Image (cartoon, rainbow, N blue to C red; front, side, top):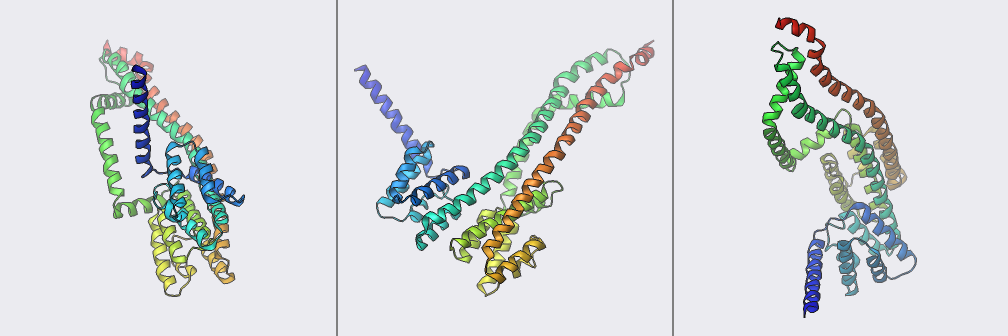
Amino acid sequence: MAPKKKVGFAAAQALAKQKALEKKAKNYKLPLGELAVFTQQLASLLNAGLPLVQCLEALQDQTEDPVFRIIIRDVRNDIASGNSFSNAVKLFPKSFNSLFISMIEAGEASGALAEILSKVASYFESSVKLTKKIKSAMTYPIAVIGLAIALVNVLLIFVIPVFASMFADFGAKLPAPTQMLIDLSDFLKYNIHWLILGAIAFFFLFKKFVSTPKGRRIKDLSLVRAPIFGGLIHKIALSRFCRTYATLIRSGVPILRTLEIVSSASNKVQIEDACSEIARHVSQGGQVSEVLAVNTFFPPMMKHMVKAGESTGNVDGMMNKIADFYDTESEATVASLTSLIEPMLIVFLGVVVGGIVMAMFLPIFQLGAVAGGLQ
């Protein structure tokens, strides 16, 4: 009887795990990189002439992510029961973003689903590529700054008190830098828990503030105007705006729906305001370039290129060229920032750590004078 109980327990465990995965699938946020791979593979299978249901079955079998495997299974079953692909993926809005869903709708309407999937896959891949480059470039300075903060805290909380007790035996007045460092060490030692609690409280209050419309607007405006990284953030926002707009327009998505998707995908209030104004203006018979011309968020070069695209009937082509330009500019900015940040970090570490060491050894250098004061 024991083996049967063991098998029954294992089956119950497997069933509970499966239910947990299915529950997670309803609100699963699929990484953009994984969505890009899925889209490209689906486009390739459709181009090979396989039916959509069979394509999804093949992708389900080869997907390593257990939650995404359940999502693909449910989408495939929904299509097999007679539902459209676009309606099936709408059941998982966290996994398939509005851009993907609108492109699927356009592909179904035009009968060119495979071609449109290839376009959206290229869009996702370019976005993932740029994001990876930026993250890779920022990893080194963030790691160094984190290490510097940890090192300074260790010195202030654990090392300096040892020196302070040794200097207390001298009974003489310490140099001002040394005394300031010891006072700072005492403050951190006895108030570190309050500082940690304060930092946590500040983080949650700040997060709550930027989730409000006013806070989000202040945050976005401040980021674009930031002295070092503001230019990079601005270029990335412009590139995303142009690339998304061009991809949707070229795929046959109506312009008002395109502007709605671009607005939600931008994650910048400046773009959202511009999209709202463009939608209002276009619905009244105006052109996109007329709104961009009076909006200070968009640079003059972009305004002229969009206007030229409208004159030639090739707005999506011009938007793609603008996006390529700003992607190249963003990569160059990241490279220059990386080369600039590295020496600045070295100087920062040298000044901070070297200053602490010098301040602590200053009384030892002046030991003769201090000892003379004791006689």
